[in-house]
Image (tube, rainbow, N blue to C red; front, side, top):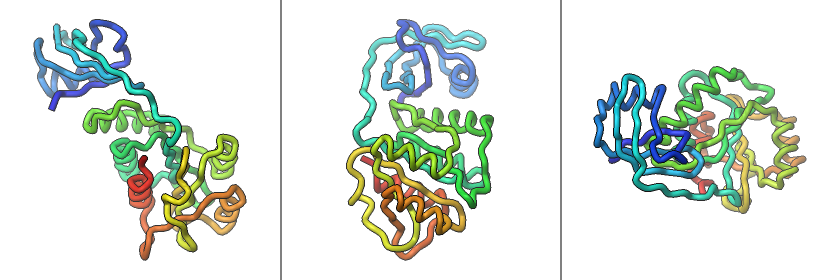
Length: 230
């Protein structure tokens, strides 16, 4: 498997790696001139390249071929999930990236415990990059700013997104209401409150649940993401 690296500037004939990407290439993989690599910018472009020079903190490559894939827009999948505690959040974001989720929204609800700060969200961006390198994804998953349930529901109404609420009770099959862009809501430990369930219903959210089991935040998020993936 060709080693993959994130590189913002693929318009140049001789793109270069710096920072963490250069460190990984030089000190972890110990790549040398002549080694074939693949570069991606997270915005649809992938380039085949060959390393020309390895410096102390920079890797200079020469592009041999590029390709571009347009971003999926008509059936985008957004997962709005309350952040779980500890490393479970990082693991969840990693799996979202692998599964092709388009956007992750850290959802804030009445029973939320974790309120991720900017520094933590920045680290999650690095997790997305690492997962992209492994899974071959072209478009970077967006990590949105934390958002309240009501604010997100209003946004979905304005954009005409289908909304699915993961909550035990009367349910519909996830695929019944998934034409077009979709937003899936995953609540905290203890679930959404009765008032939040009613609020979602007022915004025409469809309720779904995993049969015969109550799942943890990250388990529910991954399970439904896999089922809803276009």
